[in-house]
Image 1 (tube, rainbow, N blue to C red):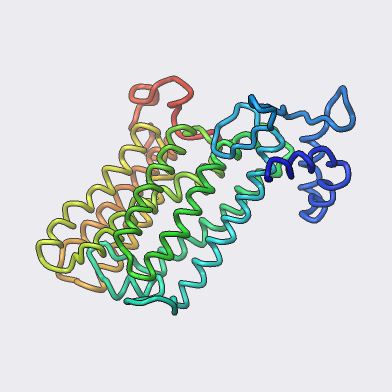
Image 2: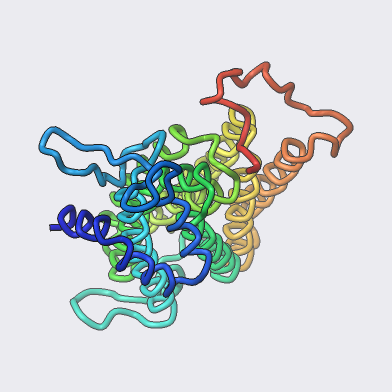
Length: 341
């Protein structure tokens, strides 16, 4: 049904699609004109290819990377991205201030759950909320890239589009499970999302920075820390042995961030993980002053922040501490960090 609808829209684009882009504003109309303009055929032909499968149906798979995205693929991603994004944002804001009323068992708001099950990985609500508000705003910018008149920009946005949609679905499911105290199921979704976002990162490590932060590195950094956050709540990590184990596991944040700094020279991951380490440190400081967890968290925050500056601003210390090309392959697929375009 979806394929038939898309074909109908593409055939009648002279009447239907311009109206939808007009509703979205002048930039959207420009994007449509750029995608449908051809130097040889003025009408009814798109400059983007229409790939057909063995059954003669147009390929609209949003999860497959294409060197040249089709019109159907771009339209599909626009629709699914908007729907999944709105669903996540609405539920995230709702459960920040209200707890679920249906069902049985303990139910809390997102941060009420954080307080009710305080663990060595509980995060400060203010810092983490600011992190996500900024990320949600940047993701609006990502969505705007799908309407760009530049072919390369649209291609970069569509290549990670399927992963972003899956991330939104997993995040929506995690929120629903977290506020209802289904921690093990929530942990499972975080693990699945970790593989999804990691695949997006390693397949598209040279994505333009604005898209990379909003869709790949920002969500991936949080998802990694959330594995500790939700996992600690699932095992009820409140006693001394659990805190000792947490004192060891927290260094995984530094190792994880250091990996991306050294191998990919990705200072965005370093900065993002340093912010989340700060969220853990502040929360632990106001809970147990006489403890090591908040000290370790602030040490990790500082190290990641300084190393990220060293990688992101090579001239900050007079020279680049990590010689470019010695660790990172010259191949473009493993090129240092990201394109600035």
